[in-house]
Image 1 (cartoon, one colour):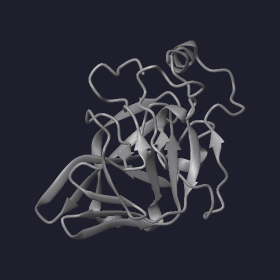
Image 2: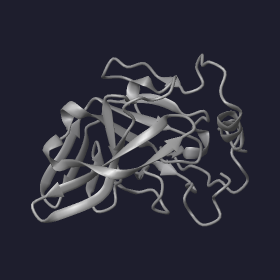
Image 3: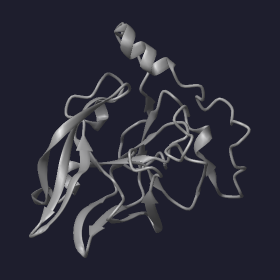
Image 4: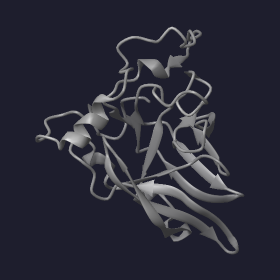
Length: 200
């Protein structure tokens, strides 16, 4: 979540965009919390902590200069100091790692797709090493929507089943299993994905 190091400037996903289809505009407008004020149930950050309720919506893409590392049962998957993180209200950051910093031979195309109202259509990837497989464990946006173009050359990973770190900090999966954020000790929640958080 630091803003120096890889020459990419921060930007939100609501930058100059053409007129949106009504369904997409409605999807973007449905959220009550947009980072302008913390809800009453948000935990108070301790010294040195960051509240995810201070992150914006529309999300912001920011460069992360700390080393982001992923290991799978002793096998290096990715290591980068050029990662981009997506910061969105109520979510822990999602880390998008440049393909050049990923062991691409471990990734195979996976079936299925999804659509994000901010980033566009996602493509999924499985991790495969010998007889081991983590299905649909990574995703990318080969043709992202306006405002998210910098993610086109990157891939993100679910933290579950992997050893992930950001700098010296260990990362654990965002609650709930659907979203792909990484929770590190400097973050303060609660986090979207927990029971009852559907409208966050």
